[in-house]
Image 1 (cartoon, chains in turn red, purple):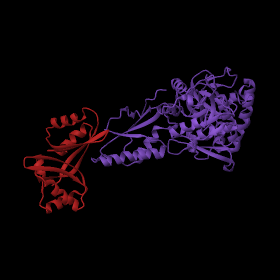
Image 2 (tube, helix red, strand yellow):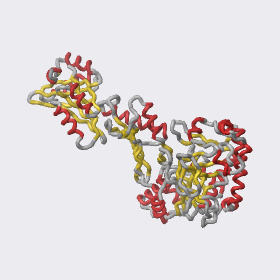
Image 3 (cartoon, helix red, strand yellow):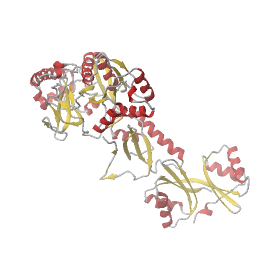
Image 4 (cartoon, chains in turn red, purple):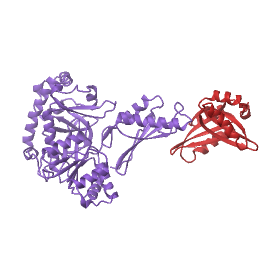
Length: 141
Length: 432
């Protein structure tokens, strides 16, 4: 259930993001989701890709600060209250969300979530019959 | 105006005789009271009676900042600690400060040379001296303070900071002499115009500015904005503090109080003594001080000496405004900063590697220090709050070990240039 998310440290300077996408494109790596967190001087780019280990390797070769972070992909119905139900479960269990980002497609929405206790989060959500993305949904084997 | 005309205008021949007498007495004192110097003399086969005149100085060993550090805190003192009435300290490279001590007589000498400094700025008993140098372990505040009291002036010991209050009190108390760092003087001038106060309401006549290098352009700016005579004063705590040399109203070099501090100029590479008129590293021998009489102390400041009589009447030797330094020490807001100190801070933290770059600039006439630190895999977290807490920790550690606030900028790996294995550590953008 755990998905390896790529996290990349980026200075705020023009062209830097392009270098990431170029590196991934030339390594034939597909991006499923991403989010960019930014401060005044730098940002952290978070990516869900089909070949995370390989992506980490090619980015490191290009001199980027990269690491892999464990996240989960939660599938919720694309309708009012869909996300709310899931988040209520987490908060009642005392799980803190560090960050999250989402993409919605037709009738389903997927939320990428990083919490302070990933295994516990998976167990709790499964207990409540919530649908989680499988690693194979994203990765190429 | 000259405080001590007898000394300051003495014929060179007579002055040299005085220096000779004081030097041989000093050599005797350090030989018998400072094991560090006795050992060096013995290694070189020098007996106290051998040194009779200042020309022989070149036979004697140098003292460096490292020697002070190696003998931290009181190892080079020539008197028992019971005779020491005051201790000052300045920041050093290893986190250990450079410690200096004063006997009662040393404080008198210091007051005397600062009285000469202030009198050269035409200050007297009718003046109100506004001292905005920091008070405390730093020698600036208290050094000027004792000299100003000695000449009978009214002393305002306001110390540094709180610019609005400084302006208010300068106006209310009709301060006539300003003592602070030149960058702070400019900062005060700009705060004044921002507050919409005309410089007419100030009664300032002159300023004695030191503790950091400054240019003629900066002097012009201060003089125009505050409508005062801006004078350069020179000193370092190892020698005594402020009061080693000072400009007179002619502004043609700083008069070195060489009856107490004998200056030499040496080639910083070969350490050979250079004649007057040649550029080299300034070296001082403190012939009258009791607690810390340093022998041939290498200041690392580069300058030129000139023994011609000044228009003001003084005959003591003059040094040019300092033209730079022979090592990598930076002076930021009056604080000595060595790049290696930043390195030590980063090495002591488990989250960082010592890849850094110091960028020093002057914004609104105040020195600002920016430290670039590379983010590498080891401490890169994908959570902004963790990155921010590391940034704050670096900032805090630099503040607590160097006493200076710095802006920390996290940069990508390999951003900082590495040339032939040795990275460029400092970019000084200040225009001096």
